[in-house]
Length: 214
Image 1 (spheres, rainbow, N blue to C red):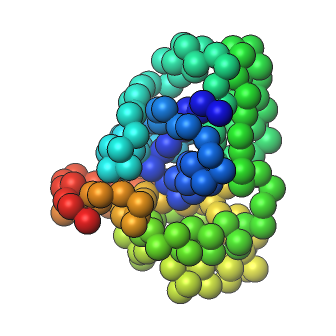
Image 2 (image 1 turned 120 degrees about the vertical axis):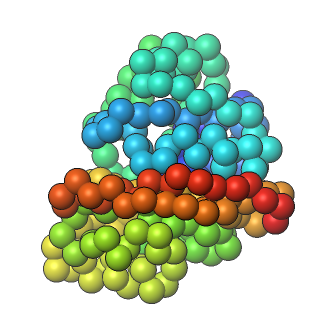
């Protein structure tokens, strides 16, 4: 089963890629979209680092703009498209329509999966992911740079209980970046960051990083 995978660098697209590989899909390429700020389709903060994550995994990557997305997908007719959609009907419907028009099949292994279980599954991989954006009540700037672990999961569950946020951030409540996985020979080390304050939304802009041997 030949496949391509959307890889923003965030936990959901990363976990979906791992699942696809584990069920025997031959992932020939990942696609990272350098999105516009406030895109309602794609992950924005530090999205270009999705291409670096792909390189650490040894998978060829295409780093493209949103305008190039449809043309890029259309060149993979007959492939599966892997994506980390969880709850967004808008994203799922758009991707399904695009794939149907261009002869691809879809593989969304996290779709409507229990949200707490998704976080626990990510933690169980032994990978490291950090919060790089927050945009919801109950999630302050102190979340930025925090690791995805049992402690942050407890805080997310509390925010869900109090404010109704999505535990996996599917409503844009937060974004993450995977920096390390035991399945890769190298990993990303973040050296310098800057907090960009946009009111309720706060982004952790990664200004300097290194790729080092694991």
